[in-house]
Image (tube, rainbow, N blue to C red; front, side):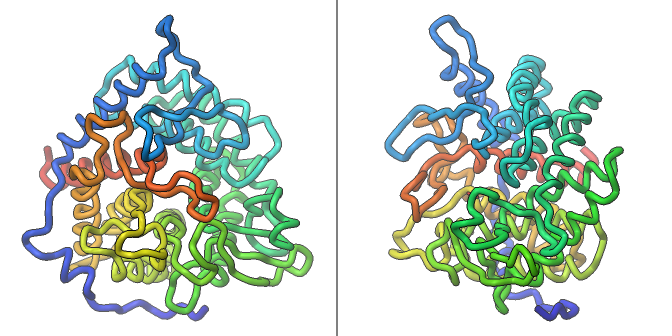
Length: 405
Ligand code: GLY
């Protein structure tokens, strides 16, 4: 794909987002709500003796359910790092030491990943959301070592002939080659971090090569993304783009595009290469231009049944968090447009339409995990909550920096 210097105008997205009536989320109220839901969850997870099983992680609450479905923290459970991450963010928001202690205990259940051969690419989700936030907030040197060791493990999935990490070793026969999924972009952050914090510099090179190859092969000419890119394992050639969790191979799966917006924002932060800044704006703009009025996407932008198709609050939370960062890199009205779009997303997510409120102990309703498999449809899902609280904290810090308070 040819990458040209990006001189796009303000566009529909900004005209809508920059309107004076754009809602301003009440961050303090929203963080207090998240804290209350965290306490509810901890209460619910205790057994009859009042004990917590720190190896059992909340994963989802089905649309018809009111209590968390938990899964064991194993190498196959890609979501096991989000609950410890939420606890770290809640500790950051509240300074509550009892929440920090619970964050430490849940985080410790993932230590085994640093000395287990890579099962798949999800190690970044698992270890950077948990240990990464833990290290950021505590500077615990043991946490640093876990992240460094896990980054080395993740790098074993790199195929230099292709130039990307193999996302799903178990799916090589299904896809007929080396597969890389868009979600894998999120796991690059841990490689960059490791390279800057005592790990091999090669980890950053791997991350950047992965991002470049993904930019070249994983997108259609209109900058919408495939979920899966298949490469020839031996020659490294791109073979085809297809989907796993989206509606059709050629449609824009909302969370896939969200991972791309988030991932390429991180890659620009880490490389300062303007090619990535140009590119991520194109990837963000096509997403923003096609959103429904409340800024929460349908689970796939071509989902059957629109406008009655399920939304995906998780994609909205990921994109809100990413745009808050991206708005700091893009000057002028365009950057302001990203900021206001993010605020609009957070305002919608904080409304009664998307909040669990008293009905369930999660933060958010209405996410879709895997529609083609009939799994987690219109559910509360733990990663939606993780990126929601992350985005709230990012917005709080931006506002504090602006007002000096
Ligand atoms: N495969 C990760 C996701 O559902 O986004």
